Image 1 (cartoon, rainbow, N blue to C red):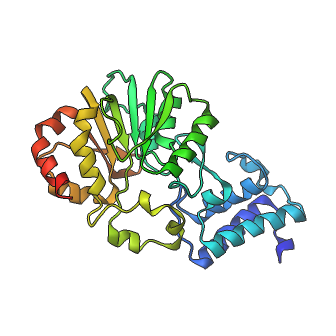
Image 2: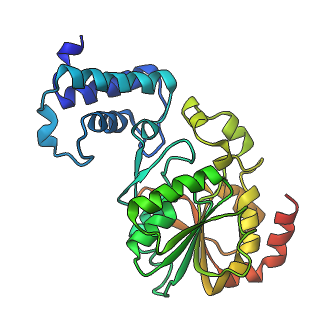
Length: 305
C-alpha cells in the first residue's frame, strides 16, 4: 500500500485521511488534519513550511516515505500534537522551539503583535513591555523582534517554561533586550513598571480541562487550569496590574471562553474586546486609569479567590 503513496501531496492527503479516521483533535497551532499532515511531511523531508505547491508532485524515496508514515503513526498512537513531534511552532511569523515544557504557541495575540498593537496603543511610545505567563516566550519575544526598540520581560511561575523561553531568546538573538523572571504573576516584580503588559494566562475551567481531548494531556496542566470559571489568574492580574503600569499604560489579556464570566463579574469595567480577522476571541484591552477607577471592586473579587 505504501508504495502507492509516491508524492508529497499523496502523503499529505493520506495523512489527513488517517487523522480523520482516527478521530484526532486539533487546535495546537493548526486546526485541521491537512495542515498537521503538511507540517509533519515537510518536517520529515527537511523542507520549508512555505514550500511552493509546485513541489507537491515531487516523489519520495522509500526511506523518506517510511519516515513520514512513522510520524503519522506516532501522531495517531500517542495523540501528541504535531508541534511537539516537530519541535517547532509558528507564531507571529516566527518559528519558535516548542516542547512539553510549555503550551504550544497559538494565541490570537500574534495578530496584535504583527499589527503593532494598533489601534489600541494609539501611537503612544513603549519602552518596556511585559509578557506575563510567558510559557515558551513566544508573545514577549515576538514583541521584541517586531519592535527592536522595546525592552521586554518574560515572566512565568514554571522554571521549565522559562528554560524553554531562554532557548527561544537565544534562537532569536534578543538576549540584550529580553530577560526571563521567575515569578508567581507580579510577586517578584516589586518596583517594576511597564508601558504595556500582555498576558495569555491559564483561563480554562476545571470542567473544561477535565473534558479536553487526549492531545491536551501532553501540555502542562499548569498552563491551562484556572478555577471554576477560568478567572482565578485573570482577576489577580487585573487587581495588581496598575502598580506595574506606567500612568498611560495598557493591559491586554486573553481569557478565551471565560470572557462571558468576566463581563458578568465586572459589568462596569470598560473592557475593549478585540475583533480579530476570524472574529472575537476573548482578548480584552483595558487602560490603567480604568483599572484604578474600579480597583475596589476588582480587589474584592480577586481577594475572594
